[in-house]
Image: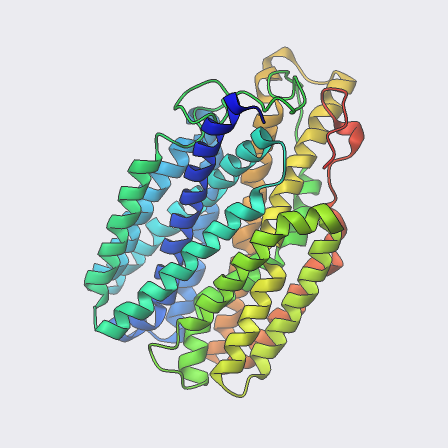
Length: 438
């Protein structure tokens, strides 16, 4: 990029990276605190299973809401508003003295989770396109880094005896302050690009295909079947992420007799290897290709789950969780990159055939088609979350968590089997007439 574009784009990239990190930190705090919720409110594993299911359902609703909000006000509004709502949910989960208030707080957090997750991916794809190269894996690395800090914060609070009614509202305050600080640095209103100034016109990088952002293709839309197949292909990651974030601490404490200080460390190890996977993911894709990276990552994730299921003690389980993160860490960001490629192809096809009506032209840009595809694909994140959290919870209720993790190993292999769905954009889909395949 030229120097005129590089500096402001870098500032926006930093802000988007920070938003991913804040979201990851809050999520880790909420879910690694599950053993504390059980002790404080007297919940059993069956109730925890219902709580996880409720959060996932609310997150799916939040993802759909994010698509609507982003279409009307821009993804920045969805990110900032979602983070503020998440802060309220986190504070409420820590301070709630009764089950009904606790459930209400986590329902609000679930809506916020889905809203922010979808909108952050829209922001990430915008920045990626402005840079003209793959960046989503690095954003997900920031999300994982935030998860490590969040899990360690829960461990530290337990170490010093800081109760949830104090610790979680403190975390909520950090999330709220971060949302306010970042709001002016995120990608601006819909149809505009990351240049570091709020509301400034979205300008593609000098080496980006001209016309990609401003020429409409009436009627362009990524087919529902394409989204569904890509969603099934990526489902292994949310399955693993939900199971580990929701049940790893419980598994280490209740099955492997780990202490309250050690219990959150399995999730921290998982998040740490997610960082490694995602920091190297973009370069691996350049060298090996997206399909090959996903295929090997899915296989490695399945092996990690098997190690957890067979672990004789907590050190082996923590190692297995780390292996799972290393393998599956790049699946989700590469899925959303693939969705962006399918949007380019859909726009190119619509322009080539001239289908649609003039009234639909405003919704036929690469950006708008991508936003809709991302919001729809993000719903599969919570389909996987339900499969991971609830399925493992069913086994937990039956005192068979080991068997639950073994089943998840089979599900994790889905990414390896369906890796072909992650193919890069076809050269023929270049909306400007020049090759844009990465």
